[in-house]
Amino acid sequence: KNLFASIETNYNRPYDKFLIFYEICFSSNTVKRKTISKISNTSYRIIPLGNFLKDESLFICSENYITLIYPQKKSFSTMPIPHRTQKSQNYPTFISSYDVFFGKKGLIFILINQFGDLFQIYWNLQLNPNKNIEILTINYFESLHGPVSS
Image (cartoon, rainbow, N blue to C red; front, top):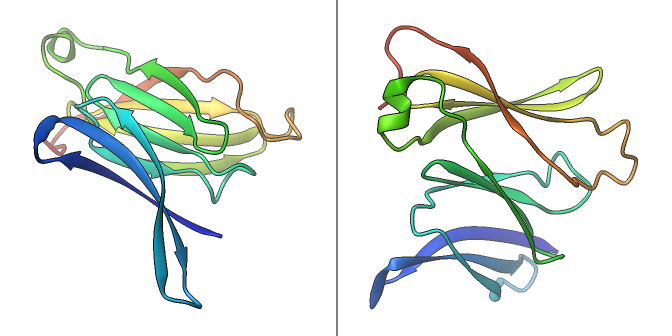
């Protein structure tokens, strides 16, 4: 089963956004719409987690928030993005880039916002053999100085 996810809008209601999953069958060249979920109207980025976790899951980045979604379980968990500086408290925060690292203690996601603030999302896969995420936290990690994306 090959799944594809997209953030889409209904042009009759442009302020509503939806997370849509499609099932793709390459042998028969077919695409079927499988699941539709309403998401925050500020959602703008999908970070797939299927390569790293047993369950198909993903992060949805929205203005000031990150949401973990398990499509099979129809489970959502939303975390606020921390504000480190006064500047970032006065403006919406957007994740501009991310990367994934594998450490001795588990999986680490590093995210950066438009102000150059780095955040980490960490959980220990070795302590959780089923690889199901129960509780996530996002923590401020470091700031980069100099030009960053805007």
